[in-house]
Image 1 (cartoon, rainbow, N blue to C red):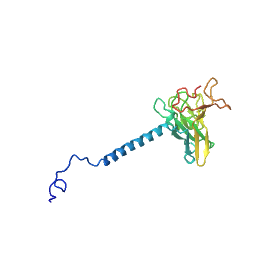
Image 2: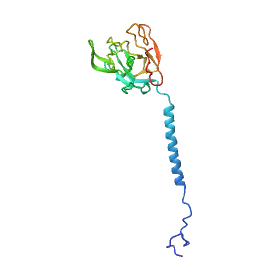
Image 3: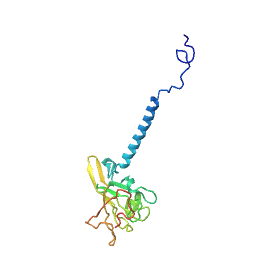
Image 4: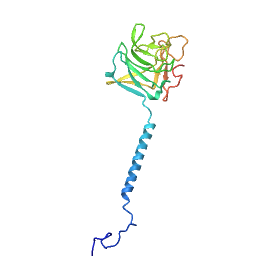
Length: 204
C-alpha cells in the first residue's frame, strides 16, 4: 500500500474537521490571566499599605552647615508644585535638627541657601514667597518671620537617625499676638495628617 498520497497511511484524505490540541492555547491564556491577577494584587497591596510614618537618614550624611532634604509626597506641595518634606542636619552645636520645609506664613516650601545672608549669618533657610530667614536650627533670623520653623522629634538607631513625621513641634512665637506657635519653654505639638497638609496647618 502506498504512503505517498496526502492523508493518513490508509490512503484517505486528511481529516481537517478534527480539532487541534487545545492545551497550548489554554495554558497560554491561563498564564496571561495569572500575570494580570499578580499585577493587580501588587497594585492593591501598594495602595492599601499605609505610607511610612518615619524617615531614616544615615548619620554619615549629616554634616554641620549642609542640611539634607527628604521630600514627603504625602505632605503635598505648594502652589509652585514644590513638594514639602523634611530638612535634616546638624546645627553649630552638633544637635540633630529635623525641620518641616513649609512656611506657615506663606505656605511655600522653604529651601536651604548656603550663600544667602541674614545679618552676619551666611547659609540660611529661605522662604521664596516672603522675606523669612531662619538659621540651621530653624530659629528666626529676620523679623519678618513671625515664628521659628516647625520641628520633628528625632532619635538615634545605630548608624541612622530616625525622624518621627507623625507629630510636629510648633515653632516658637516671635510676636506676642501670634497663634499656632509655641511659647518659650512651653512647646506645643500637633499631629500631622496622613494626607496633604491643609492650608491652615500649624497656624492656629
